[in-house]
Length: 289
Image 1 (cartoon, rainbow, N blue to C red):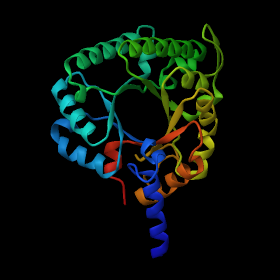
Image 2 (image 1 turned 45 degrees about the vertical axis):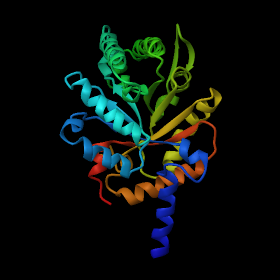
Image 3 (image 1 turned 30 degrees about the vertical axis):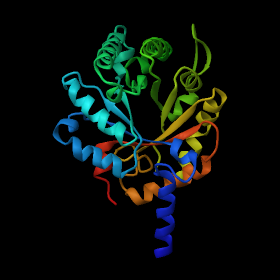
C-alpha cells in the first residue's frame, strides 16, 4: 500500500508541479476559477496560501464592479510575485440575448479603466469569458440564431481584447465538437471555430475518470494543434445532481490527482494540450483528501 501511495504522489507531482525538472512542466497551465472575489477582502492571505499550496499558476478571477480596484491590484501583485497569471473572468448566458453584448462592453470598459490605473505588477494578464450560451432560452427555441449571437459576441470580444493588448480565452463544453454552424462566419464545427478565434479555451471536461477525460477532449486537442493553440482541460470538484461520473467530489483529491496525472501523461508533449484547470477554488478547498 505504501508503494501505491508513493506512486500516486509522484503522479500528482507531475500534474501540479511548478517547474523543474524540465521546461514543459514549467509551461503547463495549472489553473482554477475564483468565482467569489469577496474572498480577496475577507481572506486574501488565506486565498493566496491555498493557491500557492496547490502550485496554481493561473487564476480566472470573477470581476465584481462593487469591489474596489485596489483589492484586485493587491491580489494580482502578490499572486504575480508567486508566479501566477491572473485573468479577468466574467460572462453569463444572457450575454447572447439581443442587447446582451452591453454587459460585455461594460466588462471591457472596466478592464480598460483598471489597466490604465494599475502598475505593471498589478495588471491582468488576460481576459477569460464564461458565457455558456446553451443555458440561454434561445438555445432550445432558435439554436442557429443563438450560435450566431455567440459568435458575434466573441468577435466583438476579440476586438476589445486586441485593443487592450490582452489574450482572450473562453470556457467551452466538451460537446461543442458536436455542434455545427452555417452563417456569416462560415460553416463548420463550433468547437473548432472557438479555438480558432480565441487565444485558448478551457474545456469543461467534467468527467471523473482519466479514460473518459482523455476521450472527450481529444478532438479539441487536435483542433488546437491545427491552429497552433493549446487547450486547458477543466474538471469539476463541486457536488452535482447531473450524474455519478461528472465530479471528483465523491472520490476526493488524491484520487482526482491520480486521474489527472494519467491525463497529463497521455497528452505529455502532444501539440494542442496545455494543462489542467480545477473548478473551482471554494469547492476545491472543501474536497475530501
